[in-house]
Image 1: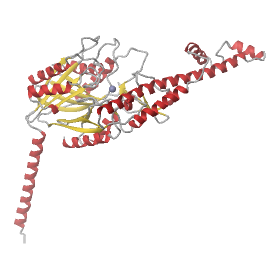
Image 2 (image 1 turned 90 degrees about the vertical axis):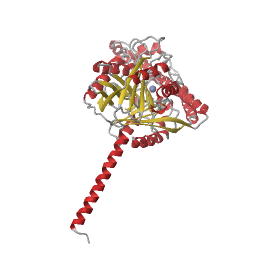
Image 3 (image 1 turned 120 degrees about the vertical axis):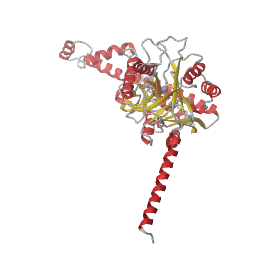
Image 4 (image 1 turned 180 degrees about the vertical axis):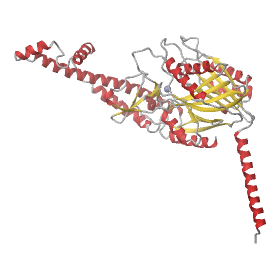
Length: 511
Ligand SMILES: [Zn+2]
């Protein structure tokens, strides 16, 4: 029999054990999450090509993060990609990582490099400049407090893919014509969120701002010169506003199918600066809301996944058949561009009496003739047929450009001698700011999916990181292979998406 006294003793013993367990668990969790005071340092180098006409400065920037357990480096480069395309050579990533291992004993897999995807040209010695920027950051490590938040920007970008009424997708490039407006049914989504990480020194001054946003920085500048484009301008706005040497690091997100707004406008010279200014101001607005705190979690995970390569020969054949069909559909016509254009103006100017003054139409009618009406009928028929030929020609510009991409990628996949490709997926946690990476042009829906499924409130996705394997559209978008750039400039089979999202889910859990 248990007496009242004994019962109280057992209960309190149980409560004590439970309390002790909770305390131990808390201690374990906290040692895992935080290994002392986080330190950070920043450095930058000008990497603008000396040979191209210069508009503004391209930078490589380095952010070193260090606590008692680990050192990581986040490098951002104003370039189109890390190797494979553009002016950064194939050995870049391994050389930079080897050098940092040798000089500072930094684990190669703790070095993250993100390309802004601006189409600027960088200097020849970008590898050395990158190491130099890290060296500068390592020299200036200071204790930091950390905070994170979000900004909002939806004025500067648009989804470049349109759904057509025939069920296919088309996309917007300066390389080819868009389909006629009458064929377009809807447009894809955008992600207006700016993910922001803020690192403040102990004196309250901001040391670094890392901001993640999804948009191709390819607007260009009126001079046509070499430019870091809109994300170069946005970083400048942030740095000018903060002052005191604060550095802004732009991390390109899932911008695969996101273009600057009004990208194909021909009425005004293209200008990235106002778009960048808007992104910079919106980031500042988000930044102001962020409160920083000391002793935060810091974790880096880097894993490799094997993704299936696409087999494109069937699609190449069917697209070639489409190309032949389009060519054969070009019909005979009396008009050429010189005669078509004035007719277009005339027939749109006056529907009832396009060819001459109404007086003559009435005069003919009075005499029992309809010569002008007959001429109008013939001209209208030819104009319609001529326009149809033009639309076929425009469609051919799309088919042939995308066909060339498919052939290039099929050749690449065959030359690799493998049915899969290995890529790095990195996961970072800095305080409550969580980020996962991918070495390709993720389309915006992938980012929206990951944000939605993540157990962490502040999750962001960086494409264009630690390598470049071209576009990575969704499995759904890959049903459209051959009709838009993102699904044609892709070496992956549709199954890649599930494999990547599964890996991201496990990494997010571990973070
Ligand atoms: Zn791109």
